[in-house]
Length: 369
Image (tube, rainbow, N blue to C red; front, side, top):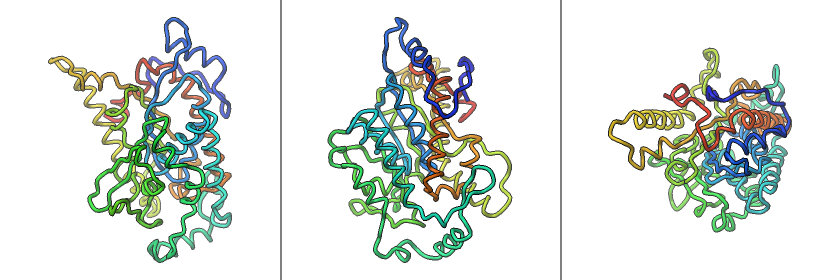
């Protein structure tokens, strides 16, 4: 949902932002017409293979030289995208970040056995009969029973692509990786100075599929259980006032689930969205309360009022309509999501990016209040 004051011309699907956009963005960021950058914080939602949509969003954003970044927060696939983005930028700036994301998702797409998936009606993809049989059989065993030697291709891919020691000491951005402490149920946010491959794997650890990750004697599971993603660190730890939410779970789904698989899928989706919705509702109400205060604005209240929120989501994208496709990092499917992410980001750059540095481009009360 865009701000009522923002115009909404049609974007060109599958192409970079139109040439006139840069001039428009420059004018919106400075009254004198002098080129000036704006700093943006990114809140990247997790969602397994659907994270390739975020890859496309980031790829398009990185083409715009007038948007810089300060903080990146993510859980699960969102954390993967954030860390790969940061490491790529460290190696080669904007183009380095684009290349790193492409390398990561392309390599991930090569690891999915072809026989486990099938094309469904329309654009969606799902398990083939063989894939369903394997999934049903695998559900009867724990990860330690299925994988006694703890083989993890994702660990190998991350270690091959990311120099964690270099990123811990020279990260170009503030990084916030969400994980869930198994013993307490609390959110644990790891910073860039604490990053290891285990931290990143913990953030994406679904306990029915992967072995629990232990860090300093504490067991951790997927960060999406407690924050998907955590937005508060971008408020408290960053100076940039603009926050872009990149969401993989749509805020609204049409129809009511009827079958057992549909009901289970929706319950899981609601569980992974609940904490974000609660946190964003807190921001919406706190901003409204601060704006109506008769006692003046303290530093915290003014900081809340200065926050500007923006959003790119996956609403009405058919290929993301099935939750089981989150477990299918099939190369053609990932590439299709990347293209759709680029299309959404190009539209956002055209319609909403001019609001950066000035106002929110979403109605917080309507979406989260």
